[in-house]
Amino acid sequence: MEYMTYKCNKSVAILLAAYNAEKYLSAQVDSILSQTYHDWILYIRNDASSDNTQSIIDDYVNNYPQRIVQVDKGGRNLGCRNNFFRLLEAVDSDYYMFCDADDVWLPSKIEESVNAIKEMERKNGSNVPLLAFCDTIVCREDMSVIASSYWRSAKIDPYRYLSYNKVAVCCIAGGSCSIFNSEVKEILFPIADNNLIYDYWIALCVAKHGKLGVINKPLTYYRQHENQVCGVSVGKQGRLLYKLRNIKALYKQYLHEAKELREVGYGPVIKYFWYKFIVLTMKLSHIN
Image (cartoon, rainbow, N blue to C red; front, side, top):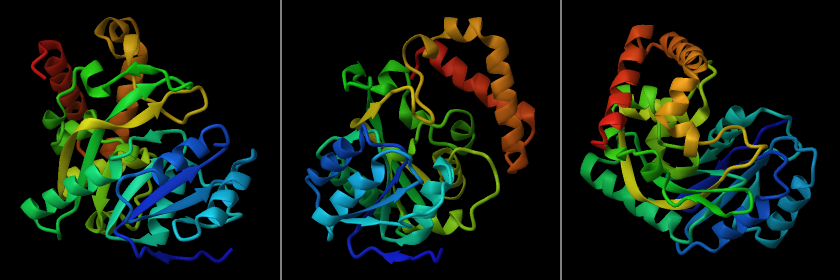
């Protein structure tokens, strides 16, 4: 299959990776079409879904040909990480926003995100890799609210999690919450051969080579459901008592993460655990 590339003639390229998303896709696309900011193009890649996702995409592309573009129609399954990176590879734009097929965006999300990244460019220069990220409203599958602010529910002060070492052990810059400039794309390709989640790897690279910024408000309804690839920990899973009761499983998870980071040049395993301890004490002290 011959892969095409696209030059986005709007300021923002929205990159939506879809897989078996028939239950949620329309709500997400409709929320993008309802944005207060209009200088964008939505690029969708269907990751070889087996449900009705393709038919839904076809309808939107036919109805909004100037707004919505399908990338690699009929392409093979790449998995979540590589689906997003394929979209990023295919599209050239000034700014990028990743989009999960099962979320819903608040009407001002793009406008406020663009304002934030442009303010970062004013302060740091446009030739610096820059990424700004927002908070989320965590919801159940039916969109009923679990937490009106993920950061508040997890006792996170986002401004204290911007350094390279903090991002490595506690990354809160989710892909669907972020906007970044074209300089970020330049430092990502060629894509490193690792197993790190796509948004975690991007945030880690920006923290090391550029600047992260905070949009200190929720701009996305983040839907939690049984079919999603990964989610955030709210409620009992985010509490210390839960973590202590599951200390063996958490240790294995953290050790695995530490070894993966060591392979990409972060440093020894003990460094990872040291910064994990620092983050834990921050939460326990309620300073943040």
